[in-house]
Image (cartoon, rainbow, N blue to C red):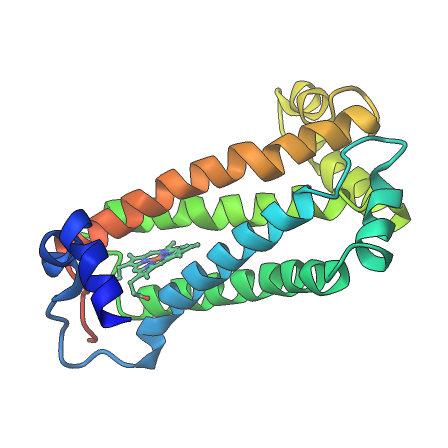
Length: 215
Ligand code: HEM
């Protein structure tokens, strides 16, 4: 095994170029609460992988979405397990991000020079909630449908732009198959892409500024 890795390293040069990445000094007074960001990242990666697997069976159409989820649960190999992993990990991601935010807040790590990283982090929080909301519609059952009707209705209460925004989000005045396709596109393409960009910026700044250390 060691030889195989050495061969890959000798071609890739990973050992050399990643020395700086792996050998970092961290403040002495960090504790387990500093693992919450890393946990959120592990959950995010699990969501990406399980979501990619689900997407090979899920059909984002008004007529077939519900049946395709039933097929995932009853027919697809390990489908039930992968769907459960996706659902549970989504909840765990929310929890870990919220606790991570609390940890950062309690340590006052939002202060300069980390204020921009706090802002980048805040966007990941919003995106995570938006991903949860768009994903909730995809099973296309009664609960998903009415949750989306109620959730999107709130958009109309935004002054001035509320009604136009509602039309944009729903793809029409009502929640229909157009909404489903729109939410699917946001859930599997736009939000993960944005999230990857934000996380890259988040980690880049953490590397540049280092971990803040406890109070
Ligand atoms: C998917 C979402 C997120 C992931 C994967 C993530 C990941 C991480 C990781 C791995 C760290 C370094 C270790 C740690 O402090 O736990 C970190 C630090 C940090 N995060 Fe996040 N984070 C996320 C969301 C957020 C949010 C929502 C905020 C704030 C609104 C935020 C603000 C920060 C700040 C300011 C630091 C630097 C903390 C310090 O130096 O003590 N992050 N993040």
